[in-house]
Length: 220
Image (cartoon, rainbow, N blue to C red; front, side, top):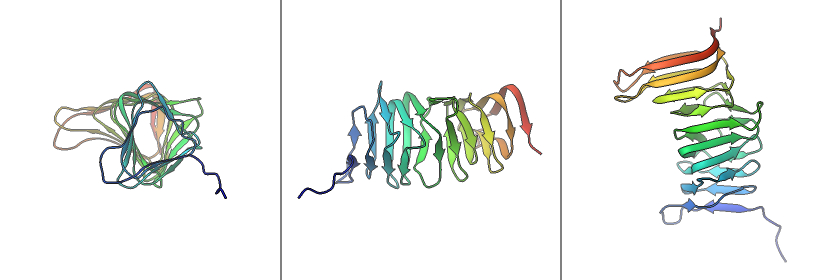
């Protein structure tokens, strides 16, 4: 007799090595399992995983090239691998709050990525122990930083409301031989944690924080 019905399952197996590429517009409502690093060709497309599962194994990477990726609070993110948004440009659309935790894949913005909330109440939440790196990226959604916000090279912008906690670390760090790091925050915010302007790799390059409107309050 027939077995129980199974939800859709796409898997990139290790096999005997080689590249894994998916060239399709994907609406993932089942499970997308990455046991071998895979790239999604996503230019002029939208990869949706609002209710589905993305499972990225340790040491492996799921890369979406260009286009839009949709994630939210109902997205199930498993594994300790890395989710990379790459391309020039790419967009991450939050269909609801997206919380980054130490038990989920690392989210890496590959540069020139724009993070939008579908509504004004959709937040990007960085929990303690998690690092979100910005490198020439724009965050239009509200950003709640309880972990580490690391700004490297070029100019990144936060247009949404920025909220910090006592565990928050915001580090703007000049890198390399010629790369200044600039973070522009559109609206005033309260620093409840640690805010650092620094440089590394012997570069001597500058680190700048701009607050365009309002007041930067350094909490008591």
